[in-house]
Every structure is written in C-alpha cells, then in structure tokens.
Image 1: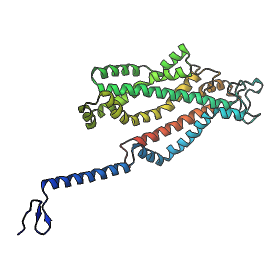
Image 2: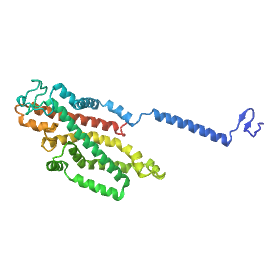
Image 3: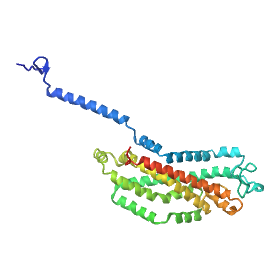
Image 4: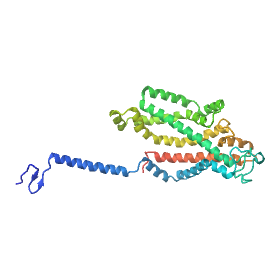
Length: 327
C-alpha cells in the first residue's frame, strides 16, 4: 500500500500535487498563454496596415492616387517648370498674347496678357491646393476639438455647442463666403481661414455622435474609474478612435474646398490677379473663349481632374478605413 510522505510522494516515485504546486502550475500556464497571446497580437497587422492592404485592392483608387501624385509633383515643382519654360507666373508679353499652344516656346499657349499658361497652371495649382489643404487642416482642428468636448462632456456644454452648430448649419455657406469676400477681399491665407470658419459644424456634429457612442465603452469606463483625468481620456483613448473618421471626412472634403476656392476666384472674390489661381485663370480666359478656347479648357480640366482624383482617393480611403469591412 502506497504511503504519502511529507513531500507529497506516494508509491514508487509518484507525487501528489499540493495546493502550492497547483498554483504554480496555473501561473506558468497563464504566463505561457499571455506570451502566446502577445506574440499573436504582434503578428496581427494593425488598423492602418490592414487599411493600406484594402486600399491597394481598389484599382480605381490606386490609379487616382498615381494621377494625384503627378499633379502634386507638377504643383510642387512650379519653380522648376518656370525654369524650364523660361517664363515667370507674372511676366507679361503683350506682343505674344493669346499665342496658340506649342508656338514660340509657349507649351500650352499664352493668356490675354501674354503670360505662359503652363507656368501659371503650376503656380496657380499651388495657391488653390494650399488654400484647400489649409482650410481642411483648420477645420479638422476646430471640428475635432469641439466634437470631442461636446460628445464627452455632455450636459449643458453639449447642448450649447449643438445649438451653435445648428445656427451655423442653417446659414447658407456659399452666400456667406461671397458676402465676406466681397466686403473684405481676403488674401489666400485669410480666405482659407474664412472657409474653415464656416466648414467646421458638419465635422463637429459627426465626431460628437461618434464620441457619444465611444464614451460608454468598457475601456473608457475603466479609465474613468482608475482616476484618469478628462484630458487624458480625450487625447489617449477617444482621439485615436475618431482619427480614421476625421481622415475620411478630410479626404472627401478637400475636392469640395478646391471647388469653393476656384468658384470664388472665378467670380473675382477669391485670389486676386496677378497672383495666379485656377479660378481666376478661368475667369480671365472666358473673355477670349472664341479665339483661344484652350485657355478655358486647360484650367477647367485641371480643376475637374484634380477634384475627381481627390474624390476617388477619398472614397478609397473611406472603404479601406471602414472597420465594418471584412478581410
């Protein structure tokens, strides 16, 4: 008959595990499981890597991104374009006005003041894209800040901000922009801030709704229970979760803001000549559309093409960053 010894031995070399041995065995197994789980999580692609993989599968979005890259390089390299053509954006040659394309060194022709169309397209695109991007960034800062605060704080803070949003959304944006531009004639930078000042309410409402759903999640409640201050919860837990939504909004809004700027400049209320922009180039060209129709077609196609590829890239980003899409 086997006899139990104080060390836990029984019979011929067999051992009965005591409570201490079982506890240690459990701890070792949990440690091994945790190690395996951490290794599995490290090997799993993150949100942005999965999004990039989905984005690459969208052939239309990838082709649009390639075209957009070429346009951006053309705009960024405006100084190089000027050096290659031998013309500056404001250089007048009245004796060569309305020169047809590919004539006398004018690759895309000249305008009514003898200025090179190709050079002005590069510099004008720089102004138009700068205004759209600066307006988008300013709108993101305002909209994300107010949306996070309104959604997390709730109560009278949320109610007050949402009433302000309702008032701003009830005012037609384009007529307000036309009025402000007509009264104050803002420059390029100020025009971008004016556009942002009337564009933030829609983003604020969108992000506020997302934060309202996120603040009830378990990890937000846990952070609040352990005493994390509101500023840390907003920046460390809520902000990273609304960034993809803000990126989608920005990608789809940039082409709209380009059209807003070009529309104002076309009406003579945006960027003023001699500073080139695609909108005021189109405005100047309309007077000569019978004799130099290419001067209307070229900036118009650049406006249309840039807005189109930006929109298609934005749609691709939306599909790639949407967490509801499966692999």
